[in-house]
Length: 212
Length: 237
Image (cartoon, rainbow over all chains, first blue to last red; front, side, top):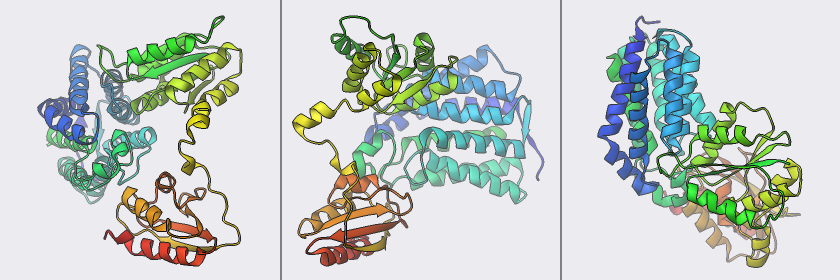
């Protein structure tokens, strides 16, 4: 297995970059959501991540599990829409899998991402092709594992993972939604990117940038 | 007496639904807690507010949670991980307004959580008996006896979604036959092939094998037509 670790500071930088991307793309995400949902994904995620950064600034964590418990709970209480429990569960499970450590090596990061993905499945019961955030996250987590197994270092594995998330996001465009508010639209949901898959692609972009 | 937790995106909606239900309860009423809105006047739900509501009214007889849609369901499920009380908590699939009314009235009468949940889930029955069934399609189709059957594979990339399902329904309208369809992957109960909602409830994806059964005067013709439609990708490929 390739060397390298992700430090607590880099994980905080990941969250900060994700918060930044949510703020910058607030209107874009809401526009995507207004096409097939209830037009609140951008504002919900921007508000949630801004609350996360405020919390992280006020009470800095000294361990990965503590950090992500705080992140997950803050999202659950501040997002409002389904992305609150979904991203909340992702980060809570990510943190529990990581444990009370100060840094993660590739194997620990892979296990934490996999646990987070499992949380999304447990909470949302989505499958591949349902036009949800799972369609971006599942290939991203798989790509990370594949790259690491092939001997890539952490930063290039995360770059590969981010690219897979983008490809997964793009693949949601022609799909008909089977979950969430968009599923009420049936065929009319086809032809639009899924907002959740789009924010998830930003999540993996932020991680790749924080560890580059 | 069991207690009731009401989860909604909107505090106003939750309060109004509770007020409506309480009009029916002159005497002792169950403990009711509302978890609604995402704080700061925002429409949404908050799993920690739901778990706090559950803990607030936790009754040894149990807590029934009635919720509106979407994230309310997800937040209620997540609240089960957060709550500190250990009493039985049941998430009900009951419709929000009618179900809440039935739940509160039944709970006030001292019924068990099973009875209250059953009443709440069945709360659309009066409306259905006045206006006709809501979604008869989801109800298991009567078995097709002494008929023919075939297995066909869905090849459309998006599976048996609304458009092909509608094509199937309209095509079958011309036949004197009864057909049912089941999804072998999910081992679902068969649904009536002339029901759009029933067909959609199969959740058939590309590659899934459908078991189609037919009976009636034109069973063979109808079955052949369905096989042709499915094999042909419903003409949309």
